[in-house]
Length: 339
Image 1 (cartoon, rainbow, N blue to C red):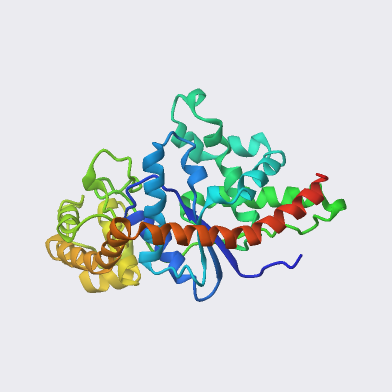
Image 2: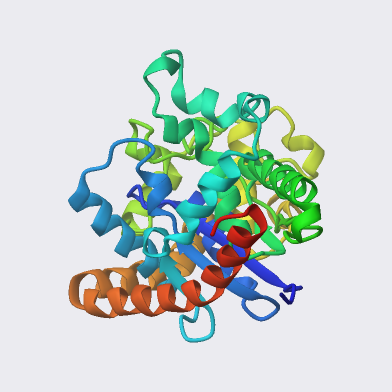
């Protein structure tokens, strides 16, 4: 079976309220990879149900993520957009890889500890085994590259460990080098966007304050208000990046501006260093509105008037995804010894 050399896989969970962190940390980067890679982009609805989801909201949120992909500029004719649950090979390979992965590896996953909290005995088995399903998502396409945020690097390292162990365990039955060891792609500034109310915490839909995040449903007025209220300090912006150290709110806003403008933090500070936030925040709001409004408007149009198109994109994408994944999983079955 021919090994791909430039295949990207990644996905976004349909848990509602897509925000600026989702866009800058993931979706925008997906768009940028279209010209250089073969891209497979998934709405990971199987991952979403590791915590309980209202079925109607899950369906709506799945369409919303697909709409965001398309509105942001991913071409569903050239690349693949689909939802994970439509391709059974994800879950089937995940079981095989559950039997390859080791408990000790999963016990080291910090994200489970963070999400499960203190009462881990009540967390779902799916939440615990989430990284193995993520490995299956990647490996079922034999993807070579995965765009990831800093918080997913540990999961990608686990995917590499699982791939290597599978290759070693079944080397005698044709698995030597069967799965590639996927490489991370971490692109540009602001891969980790922080809360507008607390620059030490990641921007999250679960934050009780709506002012902590800019969502892809926000109006221009909403965006301007949230940036105006964003956490800062009384000092002017520094003139060098080193001057952002210990100033989490300022660092976050400069990082957001840099990411939206396609600049480095140093370039942003070359323009705004020494100026007060009363000057910088309106400039950031204007930039954010200019970049996000076309996406939010197109998402709204599709969600309100063209859900049939979204569903057709997902169905066609799933057919194309199955055409890649099913032969790979059939080969896995032969390697493992299933008849």
